[in-house]
Length: 292
Ligand code: G4P
Image 1: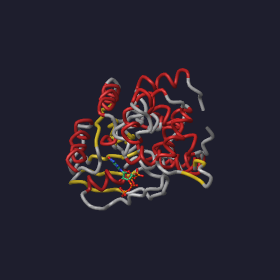
Image 2 (image 1 turned 90 degrees about the vertical axis):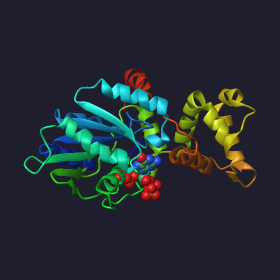
Image 3 (image 1 turned 45 degrees about the horizontal axis):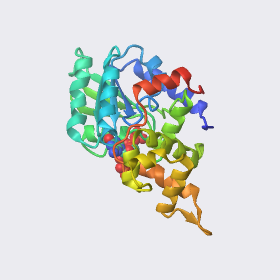
Image 4 (image 1 turned 135 degrees about the horizontal axis):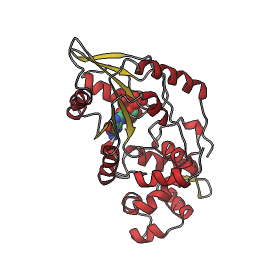
């Protein structure tokens, strides 16, 4: 898949984060719990220079809880890293992040040695939402179009505890083709950069293998779950299009509309709680997938 790329922006963000990290004690890296590896930016690891790293698997309310646990176990094996899963609209887990940061950098906090925390994450992962919840008021602008540039901001959470927003826009860095599809499915890359129909077909194929019951519950296009799992992908796509009324004159299917409906159902959680990659799968894509 051909994803449009913005190396100029990336270069600026890389420099800005590199500078900022020098005076940071803990980096909170937000990823999407439905696609944790694809929604991480591998460039951050280089920039963090051994800073303690708190991974937030956000939108956990939309993710498959069994797979979320697989990811938490995976991150638990990594050095200098803690991981938590959350829905950043909720204040209790968001405020618990303060404690987690203090655990990761126990020598910081207080007026003498204030704790300085940087929140990083690709567009649309939920940074503004988390900041708003942590700060307790509508402090950061939540924008639903990926890549709305914001000025870096500092928020005072409590005496001696400062939160910094990502300076610039941290675009995803797509290293395998499957990550591109997954990011597009989640709505994390600008709409003009990909073909909705291709992305919806990829998503459907994955869901058919791993969550056929979710597809059957939402669309009911086969006699039962096993029959749905056996359908050809184009037949499944067409059946969903017809069932949902995505049609053109002459009873032809409106593929664009059908694709948008399917993607919207995934993004909004209407398909139920699903996660579209596991640690094992991601390692496999890295080893054998199409490298970009
Ligand atoms: P960003 O700053 O990283 O770009 O992301 P932002 O907070 O703007 O969040 C992007 C979208 O994701 C928002 O939805 C937000 O509500 C949603 N979101 C953030 N965290 C969570 C979460 O933990 N769970 C769920 N289910 N959704 C989350 P939106 O529809 O674009 O905006 P809004 O109508 O909710 O304001």
